[in-house]
Structure formats: structure tokens, C-alpha cells
Image 1 (cartoon, rainbow, N blue to C red):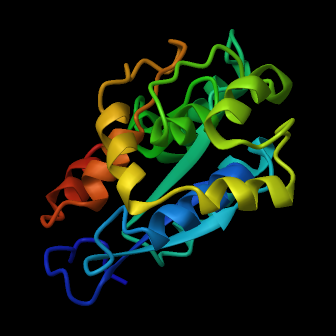
Image 2 (cartoon, helix red, strand yellow):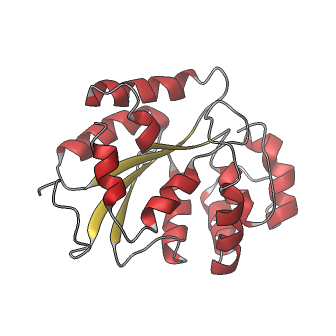
Amino acid sequence: MSKSAIWCPSPIIPICIICEGYEEYDYLVKLAAIGAWRSDIYDVQLINAKSSGNLSVRYQDRYMSNAYYMIFIFCDTDLAPYSDFLKLKEKINKFHGSKNIADEVVIFGNPCTMQIMLLHFADVMLTSKNKSKNAGIIKMLTGIENYDGHDNQREVFMKQLTKDNLANMVERVETLPKDAEQKGSSNFSVLLLYLNSESTKWINKIKAKM
């Protein structure tokens, strides 16, 4: 596939998002189902890396496959001093031989993806990715007892995400700071902006930095 020929939205443009784990993967599957992006323009294909340690390897493998016009990573930031997250970004930058390209392709939630997920229900700012510490607010907003990310709990959570509360999340996530080292931050709104854009010029802009 020629990665330069990206102007025509037909055929549909394949985009890959590599998810850190099951929570990220299930969440994006649900977002696709409720129309969070333009499926008439972008074919968003999801990969579950199953751990943060696999993200850079999966990214490099998918990039070398030459099967996608753009590849993103969707992950937590981990905890301060964000050593794992910063190492991930360093690996992506080194792979491309570019100083800051990871800032374009690594989509994060600080402290975790749950920060974004709960925005469907209320304005929330989490201070920890620890599931036991977040269990109280998750129960209050979703009714799920002692949330720890098990399969059945994720299933119950995802069933509560709808087109109606999708609009709430989109509005709220746009207001979050985008500094990855700031609690309660995320650049998820940037990904949604790209995937809802009728123009594909954003792809060229990112690739020009690689």
C-alpha cells in the first residue's frame, strides 16, 4: 500500500489502534459500536497488546506490515515519575528517528483509561490508577461493586455506554489538560477529532514529522 495516497476516502482508510489491555480494547470496541468515529471514512482496527510491555513491539510490527495509514497506541500513563510511559515514548521516537513523534501517536489517560470512561457519566478527576481506590466512584456512577476489571464487570460497564452519554464524554474530554504528567489529563479528544474528520490531511501532517 502506498502511504502517500491518502486523499480519497474511498476505499475506507485503515487505521490501527494498539490497546494496552482488555479495558482499553473493550472500551474502543464499544465506542465503535455506538458511532464514536466516521466508519464511512476510517476502518479502525484494534489490537489488544495485553500489557504495557508489549506496546512498542506491537507498534513496530504493525508499522512494518505497511497495512495501515496511521497507527496509534492507547494506554495509561502509569504512576509518577511515569518511567514506563516515558520509556514507551522514547522507544517510539527512536524507532522513527524523530524527537517528538510519540506525542502524536501515543494516546493516553492519566492516571488511567478509567479517567476517560467515567466521563460518560460525570465530571471526574481520578488521582490513582489503583482499581480499589477508584471502586467507590465506579460503584456510585455505574452500580458495579468492587470493580477490578474482570471480564463480567467490563461487560456490565460497557453496556452502560450509549450514544447519549457518548456526547457527554466527548464534551468533557475536550476540557481535560493534555500534559501527560498532569493528573486527570488526556489527549483522547485529539484522536476523536482525527477520526471524525472528513479530511485526511491530519495523516499527512503526522507523517511529515516521522
